[in-house]
Length: 291
Length: 275
Image 1: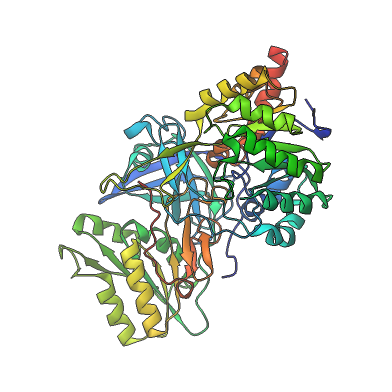
Image 2: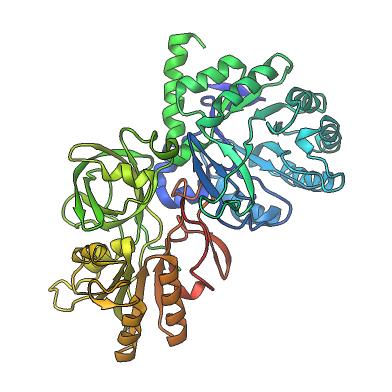
């Protein structure tokens, strides 16, 4: 059940959600077994920012009913560190590489997009817009005009497929998605995590070092399905649907709702090979349902 | 620290529980792992009960739970883990019985390195943290067993101190004095170091104990290897949830630990435990 996604040929429709699988660390843990049975049809790397980031202070996790809250804070080596250390290793993966980037200004995003445009190892770019533009103070992914401005700046800089990763923490997600499409996005991906919080069971203070975090896992699956469904009727460009998928049946639900590809995230924490199982189950359910 | 790891088969596998027995305040969970490699002492596994994982307190557990392997005899396929009932995950795992399914991923992480030339290994454990020291004692033992690997073990009280029976040649301290030395394990460590400090310390236990051991090692110029603990979602470097601060920044203890050199830490008192 191979898929053409923005001109990239993928073996099946299951990829990873950005930030939920580190192929380099996983190769240290699992060795050749990971590479010969790579669980995703494309690999989306963790968000790269222009400058290196340490990430948020611990604790960074809170388990809840059907999921977890994470407050990781986008730790990464920065653009130069990624180009020197990570990209050569990720280029050896047996699947196409999608690089997720985030900037705190249009100039920062532009610098990242230009740098990756020059690299043949990169098949596509995903823009993480779940952050504020520090120049305007507006959350880029929550404001259609802000996103339109960003797209106008970066779209001309690359001929690679450009995916906009939408945040569910916006009052009008379809309006933001339309701004992405009108600005020249080749696809959108959703949902990112939903903002959430937990308190220390005894002190009552915020548990997470970053105070709030993002909720993921089966707890958010119904939200993902509704948002993918809402966008399917307003967009012409393909949708990567994700949010709490644990089975092929649930992946098929997102495809029925309008997704072209399905992202697996939190379930990989429970089973590193979850992507393999889900794509196999999806292939079976596709035969039986005629998807 | 150079890697001391055996790589895991990719993915989660179902194994069969062999036994689950009480050892004082603890539970020893034994399983057969015919398809996995033998781990290095200090490595850990992510465990999930095959059935009814979820639906406990607050509808948890959802994520797997990380446990250092306590014993893995070189001949055979048995893995032993030591649990203490501290929440919905450990409670559910402690309910398992023979032939129940257990899902595991592992061995994971970076284990203990052999002692530096000319140094005698000295094991220091606290509470359920004694688990990785049992397999370490097995793996460091001389073939003829002539040189005992001594272990200093601290517990809350006599009921918990029954866990000391899982190791050989141990000296025990309890917080309440109901068994062994009345006081902290570091009292015993100071006594040992005063006697002979040509040792390499291997420690695992609660953060305040590890911090006291780390500070003592630094003060006496003794090398130490600490097995750290943190709440973690995945165990293989994917979630970035289990970081601890080191002199070179945050490191993920699931891939760059759980065993770290004491000299790499400014403190072993970092937050980040489970809830």
